[in-house]
Image 1 (cartoon, one colour):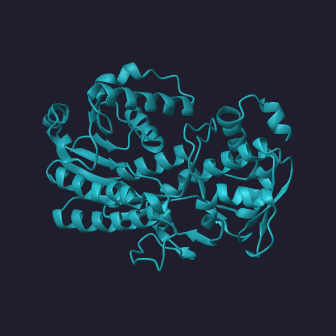
Image 2 (spheres, helix red, strand yellow):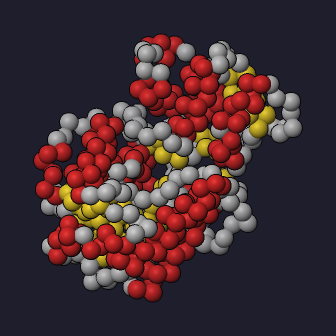
Amino acid sequence: MGEDLFVTGGSGFLCSHAIVTWLRQQPNARIACLVRAANGEAARHRLFTALARALDDQGQEEKLEENTQRITAIPGALENPNWQNNFLWQAWLSKSRGFHVLHGAANLSFRDEDRQQVWCTNVEGIRLLLQALIRPACIASFNYVSTAYVAGTREGLILEETVERPSGFNNIYEESKWVAEHLIRQTCTAQGIPYRIFRPSIIIGHSSTCRISANTGFYKVVSTIAQMARTHSMGNTSVLIPCKRNATLDLIPVDLVVLEMLTLMKLGTSTCDRTFHITNERPLTIADVFFGISPLIGLKLVHATVHGQERSAHTALVMRGIRSYLAYFNYVRRFDRRNVHSVGVSLLQEDYPLDLVRLREFVVAFLVHRVVPEFSQMEMARA
């Protein structure tokens, strides 16, 4: 099998990093990306813009122009299977001796009102993608980017190979990812297609530069609170957040996620038909996170164990702003990495400790470059 790669979600944060890293590691590989766009030109522009951002996040001086002939942007959407008739895809496929699939496209919304759209992309989109790609002689492996939070409302030790449906989910995103995992296992097993399921936790910036071109997840919470503090002149007001102080917040740098995923793919058949938690070996507690970032965002975040405790106007405002993420401040759990350990990939984390000092560096970099650019690095460091 060749080392060609077919990617969905290549214009997104994680998979754009995966693409430029794959190109660096596989000098003879070609990549095809399904990009939500009206035509080939628009798809190529959107994809290459994302790849340029990824290189900037990584602090790399590589020129994309050197790899333009190896990258094919295919306009289309998961929900519409007509993309497989596109001449760009047909031409790319005809030259491939076999390819890996990295499926990272997803609707990331947590909102109940977006339930139909999330399901359409995250579940039905995968069903249609698998139908389009079922060519066992061509697919070297189908690699799905899921999430560690298919655990739903489970606490304690979360095993990689647990496939039972949780008793509950915190949002439609979690539920759709769990259903998609089940669909992939079932379809790939029936068709004889090797598969891997990757479950990243909460992805943050690049470990070397601390940069990130996205504003989702952990950073959405940080930016929302920081902007509220500035807009409403909250100063260093204390804000009570209902949560468990020993709840774990599992944060992991994007380059480590990519490195672990691609290494697992390169190990071949020994890692196929398995699920891997791409999570932090040493997650922080929510109490530590609040302590570390409070001076930077302009508010003192305090864990409140009593949910019915009287709230100030500022607390109520912040709570409304981050309500979609509050559930993640209340689970005490550890993501088992037995499968990752069994093939030695866990050793990659030895050089990536994430303590409070490093966490502050990630938050400072984000605030300076994405939220409050008029603040200097020195001013933020003194906060």
